[in-house]
Image (tube, rainbow over the protein chains, first blue to last red):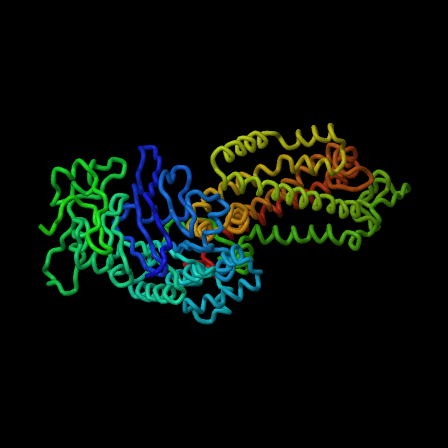
Length: 325
Length: 298
């Protein structure tokens, strides 16, 4: 229905540490269509944030490196373009909202100056124009009295308001894609809901695609069109929100769904954690990286790493076993 | 949830608020005194032509080396010039050299330190080794060498002071940059497309100002001292321009007859250096992370 906006092919990002090579992202491929909301879920350390940072080439060069892959965006492979060109993309065509609103704003610059930064950089606005636009953007993210607020300092804003400022910064240049890395993790639950709804409305109004990275399955269920589930640097299952929640096929996804407490469960019901620990990325087990924790594991799982296989219209899973049997 | 270590960083000037800084300095007794004296000295330098009772170069050969009299409060020098006027005009040289040399050192040092801290890696290593080496060169000796090579004028003294003075600033700001550049807002800025120069000057520098301001005030005192020492040895401004160090030197010969000749400029040098140091101390306390004041972040 919509056009293809982003096409990631076999992305691999590694970190060379003193203890060895960490394969943070180990062959990730996915598509994103215009205006779509994609949820990227997984445990801490599964590679979701690193994938997002890789999209914008924000991986710090020692010790990290994007060693392989293609990121097709607007008919260009973002991994091949020059440093100047990628800087043109950042904040302009692709914007990012970070996790910690308390520290993502420069404490010695006013809110207005910070929202103005991408406007000055990419839309080449003058200081006054940018300030006027900042006031408008503050209105968009529902911060009232923009004219006075624009001169305020970050420490005068609460966490939720700062995150709105970050969203305003992200929207400034009307990007095609916004990547929100755990945008609400650091905030209270009620604010979380408000903010996500705000982001959903704005992306719908502007036609922006949104990648939401989170470990909160509730957010994903409500706001995402499609979901990628990641584990140990690879995507293990892809599908629409309905597929993932209604018909999970990867043992990890099943485990994730089962471990979330439900409101309609009896209070005494025991929670079902996934046994074991996430893998040490320095020593990933051979074959499917989930096999030590998987109760469906067969011989093959210890030997060969499964690739993603299509099992439904938009549903893919990387597993040797059909868990329905 | 909020990062604990953040509370231990030096306060940002904007957060504490200028009023709170002012109040904090005034709370510090020594800084109060220092501020008053420093202001007086600066006024002395600026308004010298209005304050000085005589032209500092006007000779009165009938009245040589008099002690303090009603006409000449500090007496006269060896060619009958009014000492009070000479000392007042002398403050101009000292202040000028102090301010100019400190400003130049700070500018150069800050720029080098910014680049060093931001780039890191080999660039940082090379720059820091150079800084370490230059820092080892003794100030006064270097001024003498420069004067011997380039001539005794005041400009060369300033160049010599700056040639060594930048190191302190470079180290300080490099240290600050190393920590500030790890802050999330720097990454956020990069994510918005900002390049090196912008990040260095718009984000890193403003967040590193506190120790620079403190260092600048203290360097000011040191520079005045250095200039006075150089003048004492005959370098710096040439006669007949008065300078504190120079007057001290000339007065040395007549120490038994008219001790005030040397003591007056000596006292002023001491006052200047101490007052700037005290103000620097006050500023350091004002920007101390443990300060609780208005406008402080939660």
